[in-house]
Length: 330
Image 1 (cartoon, rainbow, N blue to C red):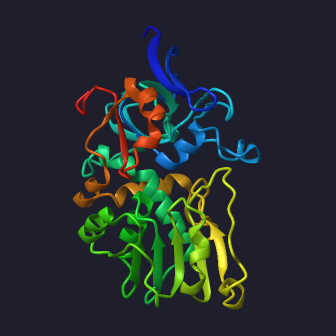
Image 2 (image 1 turned 30 degrees about the vertical axis):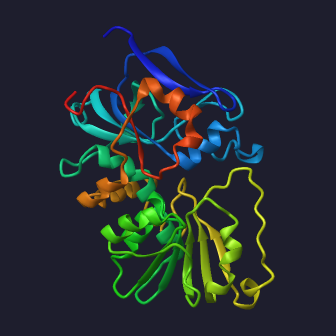
Image 3 (image 1 turned 90 degrees about the horizontal axis):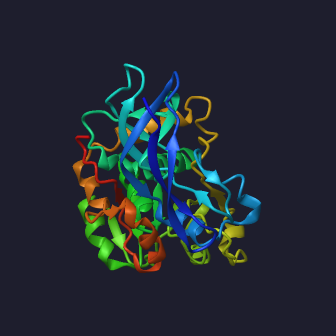
């Protein structure tokens, strides 16, 4: 096999990006050559990276698994990729796989980092895997149970998936809140109670903050039960967060935790690892209704620099799909 050509998307310092051409080496033993079919844009996180808003103190901790370059300089970033194995061991060859690789047309990766996509699940839907893992990890962090009253702030992809998996618990009560009333249709599709503001008398014992807006935390004070857990799934980057803790947070002994998906929750780390959690997340994507979370209009890989330059105009919350123009029957 001769040298393999590839192209990848890079963020150039702040608010600028480019497509880079390069050559790949021949895959070695226990490695695979993957041809990307789709990649997904993790909108909130990649917007922070593109705008240069990753705090300096977090630049090492927040690196994604196959990132090249450094935050604050040119970097190849991303972690949602589905493709087909062109070269590899007999077990993997010609299979469709999910990986945590950035936006790149072809790449070499160790086979241990591949997750095979089952035939029963459409490969494009697997772009929701990272968000589903986030929801699973937050459940493991908070351990909701039968009869709990759960408030979810933010009806983006993570908020919807959070409600979707929580609904499998008998007797649980879920309220989903978002100022965007357009999201009510999606909530109705998944049979989730939706409000564009927190009901005045509502009090929850588990609250998930998925909006990306830290100012909403101050609004939660009247809506927490004694010993309530507030679980923050948002990453605010270097934005300054001001929260009024002087009201009911103290008297009700509220607990505020952050859920971050790069590590398996300590409540499950004895029994699960990242690879097993990824397989679990994919197995929970069988419902055809989940396709409504994926934006129908795809972004051509070649147009990624243009998309990122206009990111502030792309305000809908659907999963953004990058199309590599090879089709699913590559």
